[in-house]
Image (tube, rainbow, N blue to C red; front, side, top):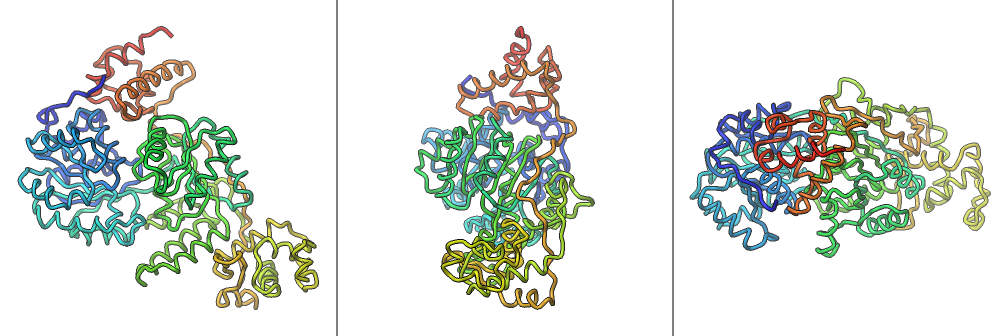
Length: 611
């Protein structure tokens, strides 16, 4: 099965609901999809804000098939374009892409289809689109719409700003009357306003869905033994697919090697890898293999794999938007997924330090610092962590989410003023040149080699905190760093020093210090059931596995990821429905006309096979 039948444009029809049913196999739109689709189909401009997995693509793909002409989709990554094109071709849609990695013969076929009017959707990068040659070609064609995906890249306030995106304003000027739809999963109010202004779409209608994803368990924990904490978490997800984000390229390779040594299937991924190694890692991930990708943020935005069951951060992201984008890789299929952020005082200080050394203009730097501080507060919150994250996007939850670590085990805050004063005093008396381990040793009265060498056993603060474990004092220090009362000499040897304006009021007792009694082990996620999700019972597992084996073989023959053939959720619904005819199979959600024609008979054969 090397190719897919392509539906003729006339088979789509012009009714959005009919296109959704026939082409995509879905009986109804979800949430704001229908309003957005009909608005764009009728020629209106739109900004669509929906969480990852919320169905943004439908908002431009359905109008593209309802309107006459070719739809041009701006996408930032080659991997994302290729996945989208392959998925649409599975649906019988004439889709193509133009990018630098494309085989010349494929590029020529796409060019011919564009010229003769048989192409429904064309995916391009902003750089390729804004080249004079392509714009001139488009000027002579009938255009259905322009879709600007990952639109946060337009904004200088966005977490993945790409200056080339701002040039897309020319589309409205050069092609008046062609509707434009911008889409993103991560944009706070400032970024939304900037997207609209930069694109010249101030009159566009905004469709903003809730960013709340009930299937995601969100958790954060203070670092103690990072390696042991990570391994303990991963043991709960044996045989599952996930992503571990690190702050540096070198760290991704160290962590991946450690996980392989522990018997896990893990690969490193970062922008500095040899291109062949990057392609191999991405290909393994897309193949459906249960594996762990240890990556920098260079990995992820173009990954559509739906069954990522966990995302771990070993270093703190620099903004809630970046964090939300990255954890959004998990649970795209709507099934339960777990996230964990491990953080420490040095992470916080390092992020502040490098940001303050940025060459960004003052106005932008202030926004970046505000976002970093919001991220820091998100890690240290005692309230519902999901609510704190959504508040960064201007969304308020009516009640605690019930599926984050702080809801599962609410942390307490106590008066830690005296403890903070002891720490601050110890830092000053030791000369503001030692790290957290040494300060904790002084407070606990430990006669370490370094304590003895520097004569710190004779200080008034020596042993002032002997009634508390070392982890307690490291937690106090970390929270003082988060508050901004203590800084870390990032470029030196990690020495702690006071930030006078924040530290002096605490030392004098003028300002209380609320200490968070936090756990270093995040509670495991509780199972989250998504209503309407088909479930495979124990007696049906054999049939489900047989369908997955069939899908894997078909995907291998076609050279595409298995999830582009059918998602697990669709296979599960097929098993539950137990269709005996093609007509019955056509009623299953996710089985459109083209997939029914391509795979229907084979699926029924699998279902009829003796168990």
